[in-house]
Structures are given as C-alpha cells and as structure tokens.
Image (cartoon, rainbow, N blue to C red; front, top):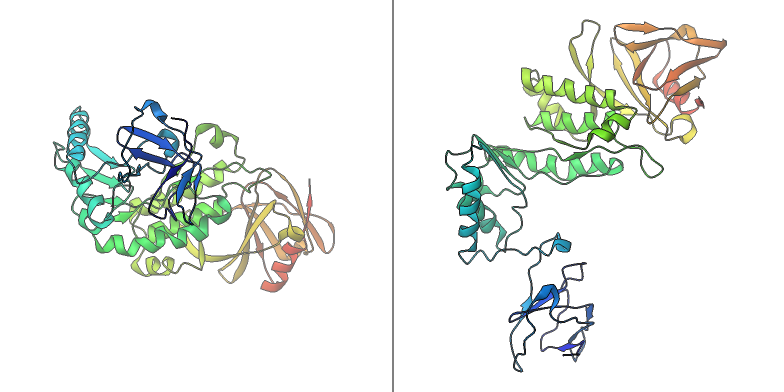
Length: 386
C-alpha cells in the first residue's frame, strides 16, 4: 500500500509527462506517476495510489495494464471514449435529446478527441451524433474535419488562438494551408479563432494589419473568421475602432461577393500583404502594401505600411496603444495628411525640412515627388514626441 514504484516489463519510453495526464489504470484503480526509467529495470516512479477516489486493488504479477487516455485538457481529468464500444452511441443519444429543444446548428468542439485511427474515428464519432439530430442542422462545424465528414460539416478545422507576434505566420502555416483541401471537400475552414489582445509590456496586442491579413486570406477562399475576445478588452484597447473597421469592411466584401476571382488568386499568395481601402468615393479598393520595419529607430509603438495608388506613395500608420506626435524629416510641401482618403487634415511644420503629424488612430500620409526609399527612410528616422 505504501509502494511508490511500479516495476514493469516494457520500456515506457515516450509515455506522456504532461501535467494532469500521467495516470495509469490498473483494474478499478487510477495511479498517478511522477516519472519513469527507460533502462532496466523499467519502472514508474513517484506513484500515488487510488487517485480521484478510485478503489485501491491488488493485481497478480504479469497483469497487463495501461495509460489512461486523458484528454489534452488533463486538469479536468476528462478521458477519451473508446470508439470501439457503445459509449459514443450513448453520448450521442444524450446530445440529440438536448438538440431536440429547438436548435438548428451544431458545433462539434473537441472532435479531435478520439482514439486512432483519426481519419476514421473523427468522422465516425461525428456521424453517430449527426444522424440522430432531427431536424438535420442547417449548418454544422467541427473543431476537426476529415474527408469523410464533408457531407455533414459546412466547415471545420479552426485553430486555437495565436499570439499577435506570430499570428500571420500561423495563418500561413495552418488555416491557409488547409483552405484548398477544404474547398475540394465542398466546405471551408474557419480562419480563427482570432484572439483579442491588449497591448502590454509582453505584446504589441491585436493590431489592424493582423486582422487585415487574417480576414483577407480567409476571403480569398470564401471562408469566415471568428473573433475570440471579451467586451472589457474591446473597450480597453485604444485601436478597437480601427480593428473593428477592418472586420466590418471585409465582412461587407464577403456579403456583397465583391472580390473577383483574380483578386482571390492574388490574396492566395501568402507573402504579399494587402489593405482594403475606402476611397474618395467611399468605394472599396484593394491594394498591396508592405510593412516599414523599425519605424522611429526601432520603436514598437508605431506601425506603418507603404503602398502606391494613383501614381502617389501612401503610408498608413498608427500608434499601437496610445497617442502622440511623430516628427519626420520631410518637407511639408511634398506631403498631405489624410484622416480618411476623402478627408485632409493640416500638417504642422516648424522647420523647412521636418513635419510633425499626430499619431494615434490609422491615418494616411500621401507623398508627392518623394522616392519610395526616401519615404521609408523618413519613417525609420522619425522621432516620437509623447
């Protein structure tokens, strides 16, 4: 009863060491372990018997036992169903009873949580639920989707929240990578969940260019996005108005079916970023743009992107978390400052070769008679005045 080691015949190499998932099942008893040896004699170490109120029992020498299949959310001690039993059918009946209250949509969250082979069991587990839903859902989605669920799910394979600093890279790696496969199966991938992060010492927070990238790539494949946040963060983030305006424009583009097939193919090229503008006639314009790195001598406080339209150079820029002024080594006679593309505001200049412009919400600096490299250099050498 006081043993803390279990000697075993088989090498336990590569068995999980994740917190909350180190659980053995011997008969009626669950036993946790802290570690194991991978050289003879093999054994589990740091064992605690009878966890989770299970019944302590004895077993003969040579008893075959195994690792409990605890889900990735191990702290909740939830375990995967054995898909080779009738447990999934029992659960499916209970879900169908709840659905019968009048629901018309079903989301199969956590549907990757099945036993291997996943290509079969993901769709098989969903089918056992789906076939019992009456009436059949208007549309359905799954956290995981295989080829064999195309006839049930209108979408799936959404990925959990990525931090702002890696969001664009992860969009390229995952949703954008899946989108073509999903389209071939008559469905679409959810380009979410998009988290909503406040700027802090640890992150620049969610910024308009990040949402612009995610939503434009989603639109390229006729796919939706989803925002995972809370009202307190929306209220507290200084750039929420700009962030939501990005989402609003792209949702209208989707609703109006505004993108041409050529534009969709352009957006499927993942390295080039694009911005959706409202022009002087308040009509949409889609143009490629490029980030200006190291604005204001490497400050992270200001983000800026350069693009060309109507033979002029533009820089769209903003402050990530507050407001101030930006001093640029440019002549006021060569630039215009736009609140929106149809609304010009004054440019302040105390020196012949310098201008001072406000920096807070998104604004546009329009440059004439200035080369692209010179304009980029001006923003790199700018000075932030708080």
